Image 1 (cartoon, rainbow, N blue to C red):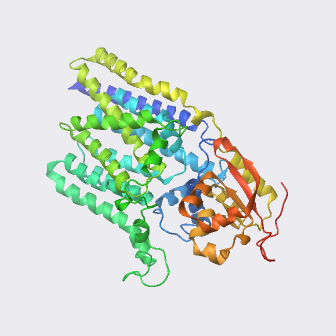
Image 2 (image 1 turned 30 degrees about the vertical axis):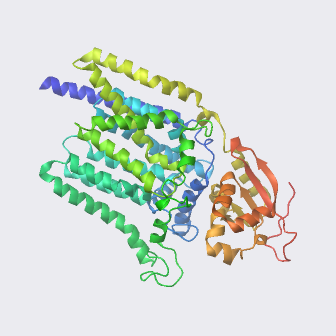
Image 3 (image 1 turned 135 degrees about the vertical axis):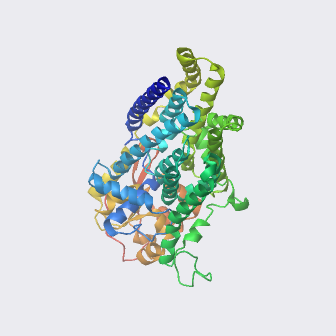
Length: 527
């Protein structure tokens, strides 16, 4: 008995040492070049601008809140900004958000180790899964971005961790329910994992309190998630305009937003829309400098092995259910974006570690002590070798600067353009410019928010002075038919262009030669 207790204590100390070591490695790898790569994305700016609105005005958005995502993520970012001393505490405003993402990444890293160890009961396999996740150019680059997905996946993994393992108590399931509720209220796509957790809880819960666990878990999750539609109904924005319960007055609608399936691809329920483009970005190294075909394909193959392993193991079955549910979310969740892989990357890495752990156990047989450890080390080295070679060649995340041009463009605007100029921009610039240039407007809202398009700009390109153009803005103009943005672009001239490490940024000035006498601002400048 005493020997078993001493062995367990030693194993726990080894696990703790490995977790601390891996978190330190994650800090070094993730923080290196974190502010310079990848480029600042429009969605990062949108998430930060929503936090800005909460702090400055108490509203959930600088514009009409259209229920694009639940508000908890904005609360977390705004709280972080307030605690750390403001948006510019780390320099450029988006730097602050990326530091927060670094903290979320560290928690996610520790959870990958913990979940893999719980399922495989093997520290070496858990370390392998964690290292693959840390060094993957795909996970490293995506987890740097100020995205609600990164906060959501942390809550999701915490919830999953709580229901795994032996001797689960009611408190563990309660914590799991609260954490999953927080995940959904951070990023709505997490709601797709609810069926997975219902199945998992039924599999792993003790027979004596299985029904109570199910009832408690579902009640807590439903209560937390219901706060969101309750908020919408309090604002008379739950049901669409023109329906029996929505009334005839113009308003946004949560249900209308939920049923929006994105760009139509002609398939039933828009199934698979955007998959080809996104999948290529995940696996095609000729298309994307952050693609990681090894992690994606090895994770999928490991999922197939999990089918066999899950026959005799509830813990393996639980992971398989999570993987399958992730696939179903991609399939039926509407338009697929390249960032949707964020919630699947940890599961893929865990699957690889768990399957390798199973092979170690199979090959080791009755081996004990140093012989079992040596065999495990050799097998891990064999599996890790192709990953190491591949990752050593994919160094853009650690040495390429993709933001210098964006920062230079902002500096030029601040130092050159009059404060009353109307600027249409990719949202990466919103927080930086809104204080000095209060007429800065998000390009997407210029075409989708009637208050901006018609009341402020009178649907007239002549009421705009400058446009900050990025590949994202240009692509959306064409993909979504943004008419006013198209007219702004067509009637503008390029003043400056920054190559920006492959993500070019243009500053364009509107040509008002054919406009009336009254214009938005007399702001003609020379380069």
